[in-house]
Structure formats: C-alpha cells, structure tokens
Length: 146
Ligand SMILES: CC(C)(COP(=O)(O)OP(=O)(O)OC[C@H]1O[C@@H](n2cnc3c(N)ncnc32)[C@H](O)[C@@H]1OP(=O)(O)O)[C@@H](O)C(=O)NCCC(=O)NCCS
Image (cartoon, rainbow, N blue to C red; front, side):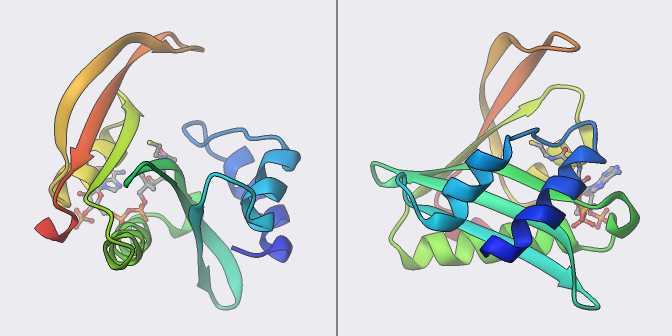
C-alpha cells in the first residue's frame, strides 16, 4: 500500500458495512511506515485497487487490523490471495502467530479465516457497536498451516 492507494482504500471501506471506517490520518500513518511495524497490501484488478489487508506486528506476533474487498470484486479469490500474501510475508519475518477479531455474524470472513486454518481462541462479549455484537477471536499458528 502506497500513499496513492489511500483514496481508493477509503472508498472501498466506505462501501462496505463490515469494513473499518478509519480516518484518513490513520491510513496515512499506515503508508508512512509509522510504528507499529505493519504489512499493508493492496490487490489490483485492471490497474485499480479492489482490496486491501493490513497486519500490525507486535512482540513477535501479528494481528490483522483490516481486510476488505470491493463489493464488485468479491468471491473471486482476492481476499484469500491477500491473506496468503500476508501470511507469506509474516512467515519470512519469523512471525509465529497471526491473530484477528471478527464480528460473530460475519459469515463470509469467518469462512475465509476457517478455510485458511484459523481456529477460534475466545470471544469478547458485546465488543462491537452498531449493532452490539460479540467479537470472535481467532488465531493461525504456525503460519505455514495451509
Ligand atoms: C471477507 C472478505 C474480505 C472476503 O473477500 P473475498 O475476496 O470475497 O473472498 P474470497 O473470494 O477470497 O473467498 C475466500 C473464501 O471465503 C469464504 N467466503 C467469501 N465470501 C463469502 C460469502 N459471501 N459467503 C460465504 N463464504 C464466503 C468462502 O469460503 C470463500 O471460498 P470459496 O469461494 O472457495 O467458497 C469480503 O467479503 C469483504 O471485504 N467483506 C467486508 C469486509 C470484512 O468483513 N472484512 C473482514 C473484517 S474481520
């Protein structure tokens, strides 16, 4: 992800109910390489950004902060491809475990993660707002599971 990707990334997020609504300044911190260390990827189709994924690295582990694919490009393997690229890059950095949190009702994301070998490690009750909902906590470890 580069500075020129920030606009399309914000646009993709705005069009998806389940995507994060980060302020522009947060995306600018991601592309400027501010701490924490992150891997931030975009997926392109016909030269246009259609998806993105961001993982933050903390204390030898990594956490997915954000992943989304434009509605018109979903179900074509782009989300899985982004996750695979992320895990490959994290593996090369010696990261042993990848964590994430997802809304309990987000069936598409849950299936994607389970299909990659993520397992449920816990729940945070009423973690999300609008609507209030539990977060499912998941982990992939080791990363070379798939
Ligand atoms: C979750 C998301 C990133 C998946 O991206 P995608 O490019 O559509 O996913 P893929 O095409 O790579 O699908 C990979 C697997 O995920 C699952 N999946 C993806 N979309 C699904 C859907 N709508 N319903 C059920 N399963 C789905 C399937 O198991 C799929 O494998 P299959 O197509 O072989 O059956 C996308 O739906 C999205 O952007 N959602 C909104 C944002 C979001 O929820 N982010 C996650 C927050 S934790």
